[in-house]
Length: 262
Image 1 (cartoon, one colour):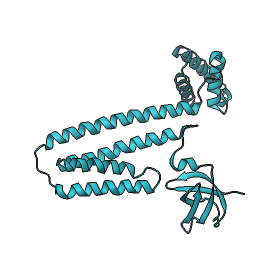
Image 2 (cartoon, helix red, strand yellow; image 1 turned 180 degrees about the vertical axis):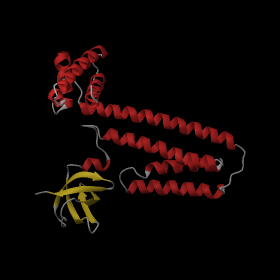
Image 3 (cartoon, rainbow, N blue to C red; image 1 turned 120 degrees about the vertical axis):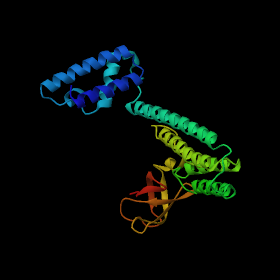
Image 4 (cartoon, rainbow, N blue to C red; image 1 turned 90 degrees about the vertical axis):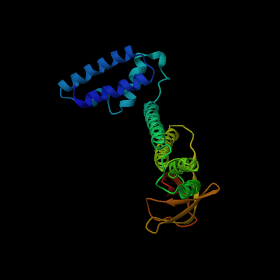
């Protein structure tokens, strides 16, 4: 089979297996699909003549027809993709965490009782101050962008207060930041799950708000009140004057994208 056809079979197999269908049944379904796609290719027809324009719907409908006892219980394609993404990110988080821990232990052993190049008295305050600034910055902003740096700086501060070598402090900072970024990324993906709990600014999507300050992209202005909170806002359309009722349609960085309610 051609590359696109192989990819179609691979995606269907993955969906069926993750949906809980037995491997024996999946093998049979995959072979039948391969046969249909090969016949289509031999006749010069597009693969869509077999699977249609909606591959997720095709995979779910076929599985339900072959396994009627599972009808109505098949997970959505989106749910399966989301589960696989979380599994992949969890695996990466585990590997990176293990690598950081090993590196940290190795550096501690190598630098034990060796004199630091940096002034530890100064750097313990630098790290502590950086952790506090990043932590406070995260509180007043959205998007969890500063949180990983606050975690990394906090770990480096702990290392410095215990008098560990400067190399340990840097490994703690970069390693802690990297692990925290992966964890936050995985957490944010979990919040994007269909029908999942929405937290932070994402909970405002779909809500209506009132413009407190003219929303104007070229002028870099825009302030709205949604529920009891005030947020900076942007728009992809024309400027929106003060007092207008708008709807929050998306979160972009630390701002809410709004559109005027007609």
